[in-house]
Amino acid sequence: MTGMQLAPYIEFAREKLGLEFNDIQLLVTALTHRSYVNEHKKSVSEHNERLEFLGDAVLELVTTDYLFKNYDEPEGILTAWRAALVRTESIGEAGHLLGYEPLIRMSKGEKKGSERARLQILANAFEATIGAIYLEKGYDVAAEFIAKHILTKLDSILKSGSWRDPKSHLQEVMQAKDAVTPRYVVLSAEGPDHDKTFTIAVYAGGKLIAQGVGSSKHAAETVAAKEALGHYAA
Image (cartoon, rainbow, N blue to C red; front, side, top):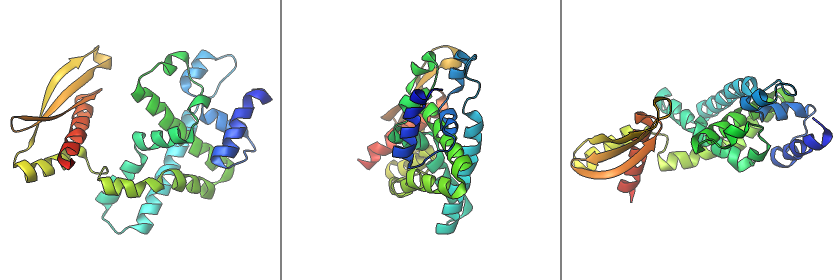
């Protein structure tokens, strides 16, 4: 890449990450999706999946270390909290707030992908960025980055109860409020087998409480449960 092409990455590293990279190509690779390499095989040979693999491990270790040292809850609770902190939605949102989406190199087809696919790419790039920071600056700097952009979300996660499995949580709430268990009904399943979209309703007895849409029955049920919890909280 030319100096002009690298300039936005150098600026992003300085302004958003607060870092000076000795090897800015690490950050470029962290923000390069596999699809871009497939479209530019003659000029680009490396995508971000190896850095994502590394960053995922660093993210889990830093998060686990923080929870272990600061909370006395049992393993099952800490595992659920960690899962809420590092799930795709959480780290994808962190990537969105950092504003690196315009710098992600991906194919034209991926740029037109679904919102879910976009969020996954943002999340993967976030983990890859952690990997790049770890290689460039070491564990402590990577841990500071994770603390600033991920661990700060814990208070809101605990306050909202979003760390709990929505379906299990809804069952507890519905049994307490209505003395019934949730009943999920598939309203529609559209699209080809490899790319179906499900719409599922959740009922309390015979009363429709909420609906959810997802790429699988489980995903749609989870969305419906989240919506239903909002109904009970209102």
